[in-house]
Amino acid sequence: MVNHWITRVTDGENFWNSDRYSVWGITDTVHKIVENSVEPGDIIWFVKNKPFGGNIVAFATFHKEILRGDGSTLGRLSNDDFKWKETGWVSNYLLKYKSRVNVEVEEIIRLDVTGNSPMRRSTSEETYKMLSRLNVDLDAIYLAFS
Image (cartoon, rainbow, N blue to C red; front, side, top):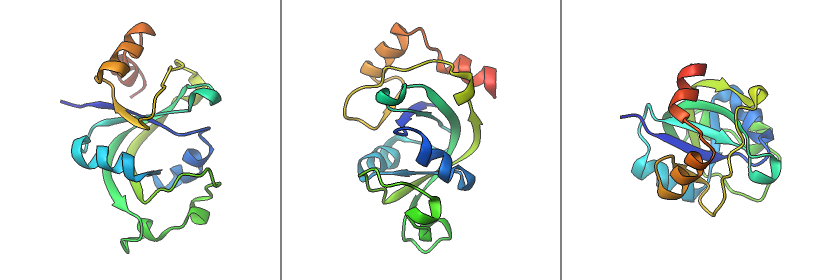
């Protein structure tokens, strides 16, 4: 079974800057979630933080996680190489994805993602309630745009 995961990308600028490498920088907190729960083939939904509109900007298929500094080509790249502006978070890992679909211009839906967790499964109680309240069916959106 494929799971849907929602992760925040602040204002989206750094996300798009590193998209040419099909990676997103993640914190140690998100790494623990990915390491313990996310499987290759799961769908990652990239969502702007609420102060920046809360809209879904893209979705992609999770491929793997890369430890920064591991010696691999992508692991050696710096924040400057990715053209990331400083936002105060530290990304010791990269979330490698494939088959990214840009839906930002569609402004499909604005999600009301709140709380401390920067990444959550769509079936978690709080997230499921939010998606139900907004009448958002991630499976249907995924099928419509894939």
